[in-house]
Length: 130
Image (cartoon, rainbow, N blue to C red; front, side):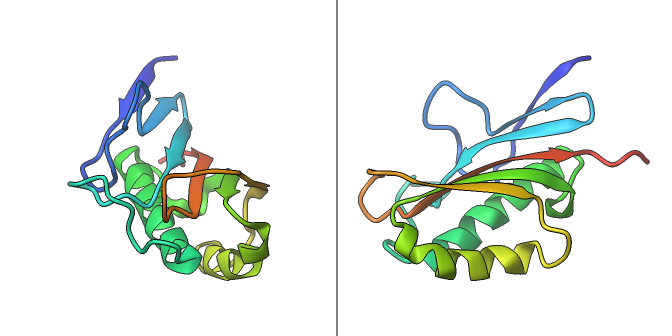
């Protein structure tokens, strides 16, 4: 199997030593994706878990599309949120991206993100055979 780095300008560039995603065989591993403005790196929609969830899942959709997959081929999601009290709001937006047969998921409360940031999401998806 060959490891392929997935890059798109339709999602924030990595801020450290990692790739937006890695494709290995028919699997894509998407790194933690944050609600950053693509050009400036500023946090978008500060303290708005619903809008930040939408933004991040759209970025993930763009990354997956670049790798030949899509949001509907996600099999595992890990979400990191700043406050589990926001779970219901986050989950409502999340469900709109995965309305049928949602992927496996873990949601973890995290102590600290950059100011105004509420969420980071990573996932694993497969590339459908054509």
